[in-house]
Length: 149
Image 1 (cartoon, rainbow, N blue to C red):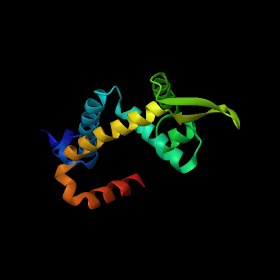
Image 2: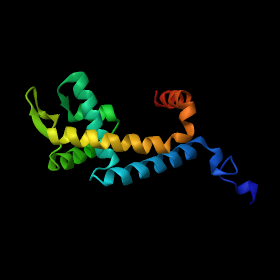
Image 3: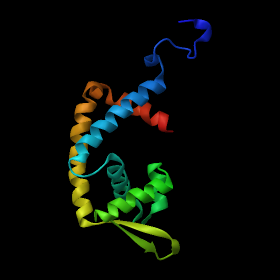
Image 4: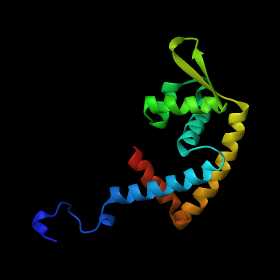
């Protein structure tokens, strides 16, 4: 290849951290979506349900906006996913008594059971997916947390 016209500063894409992160993320998401799909959920649906659970434990009442902020998800996408979850009867969206524009979210009993089952699946997939780095879990997780912050 003519190095004068070279676009990238590296020879192979595997030399780029962003590319590696993208590849790992895509593989992990695919594994999760395949496994969760067997129970009719997507990874995004599970993640929002899990976020709702954690926020509810910490705060009690949770709005759609609070959940979107917590999950770092787009407000419109969050609303659309929550509409699907509401149709599946795993969450309820209720008008916020303090703000007529906001909706509070509540997990239904069916939702709690679905989340419990989905979490078992997520644990299994994570166990297989991350088995090669389990000895370095503390370091790996620490690096991920550093990137998040």
